[in-house]
Length: 147
Image 1 (cartoon, rainbow, N blue to C red):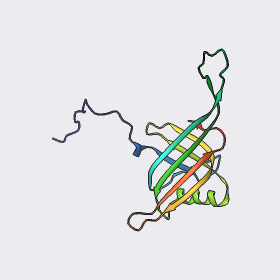
Image 2: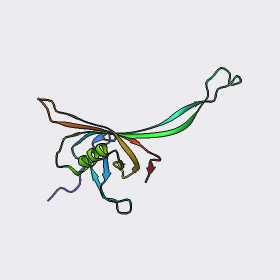
Image 3: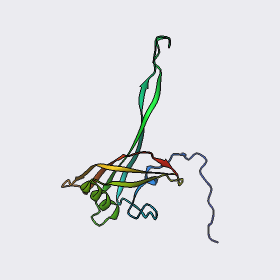
């Protein structure tokens, strides 16, 4: 008889694994996007920040009061260099030509953050005793939309 069901460990952690998050770039058009992941990803991050506006005054009891101001976002990745990869080629092209990329950060549950940004860093490391890697920073231009 084949085994079709196994018990679930009641003590397992509900942690979200970093390997399940992915950065993709649109190599299609605005109307017909063609999303391709940047190949060889080892580490991907999404950063969202807001400027801090100081709203303190003499009657706040000696406590600082702040409000969120202008927001910004960035995406960063480190990947193994895969020379034939379309996603990495698109990032390199965007950096070389100074054009924006349409990028997407995908969560394991299917949530997506999509926006336009400039490739502000595109670096390669080629150690003699390890794989070649690419690191890239995309700095957002405008809103990052949650889909």
